[in-house]
Image 1 (cartoon, rainbow, N blue to C red):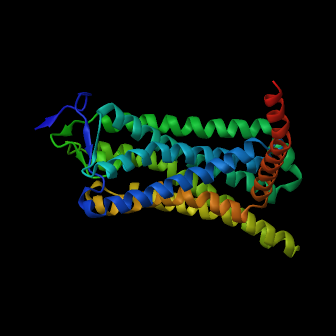
Image 2 (image 1 turned 30 degrees about the horizontal axis):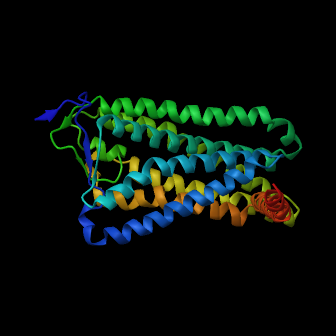
Image 3 (image 1 turned 180 degrees about the horizontal axis):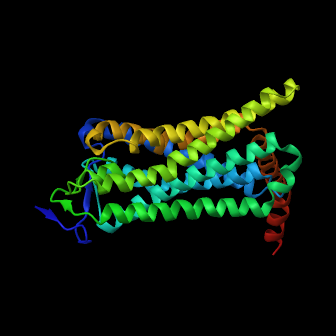
Amino acid sequence: MYNNSTDATVGFVLLGFSELLCLRLLLFLIFLIIHLATLAGNLMIFLAVVTEPSRPPMLFFLCQLSAIELCYTLVIVPKALLGLMLGGGSTISFTGCAVQMHLFVALGGAECFLLLAMSYDRYVAICQPLHYPVVMSEELCLRLALACWLGGFAAALGLTAAVFRFPFCQSRRIDHFFCDVPAVLHLACTQSYSPELALLAACVLLLLLPFLLILTSYLCIAAALLGTTSSAGRDKGFSTCISQLTITLLHYGCATFIYIRPKSSYSPARDKVVSLVYTNITPLLYPLIYSLRNKEIREVLRKMLRRKKVALQSWDTIRPVICACGEFY
């Protein structure tokens, strides 16, 4: 017995962490603090780069990455926090589940492509430094960013349509805190391999191919750096690439563990733990890693703080005049 998947009136129940009711208040506070810190860190980088008049390609891509992380966490975490607040999980409509899955996959896919674009930027900067200003023009950066966003949303649309065209069993209880692809596919009433093939095709497009290209870029970068005679240039190049490589390994490592595997190995408890890492911890680490290791980001953050300080000083200067004028009138 199953309800047809085309029945949009039948929703799902996100069980979340209902098995940990005794810890739900503690988990809610922890996740809320992490969520607010993630939003603050990525929003600070986004605003610092946006308000910077001169933005080199790397800052432009970091701004795009922060924007993705902001949207990424807002799609997943508020619903998870609501489930923790209610205690027994939360309901989500059929359409809402499909939209959440689509946005989650689209933003994750856009991030995969964006990390590839950032690795290409570093490849040109280190392996072809004389051609860098010409190759990485503002027009090319805009086209790459647009391609990343459109590519992620296009792939997500295909995967979401493939997942939700299958009928679902009578049970609509998703043992997860959001509509993740493996958790929803686990409810599909089909013995065919079509769902797994759709997921595999998306993983090849969004994970394997970009990761192989990124790995190739960094291998070329490492070879170029090892061949340079300047130790200072070599150290600077490695320092610049370490942060991006760290982000890449975090993102692709968690995603590969979750999605590139057969349906039979699905484990709700294990998936929820890993999902917590890449939906809460890694978005929080991104601003910290880039702020600590990227000189350009540190500089634009200092400029933003200086501008804020000057604005506050200017306000303190004119506030007595405004108050005196008010009293006069």
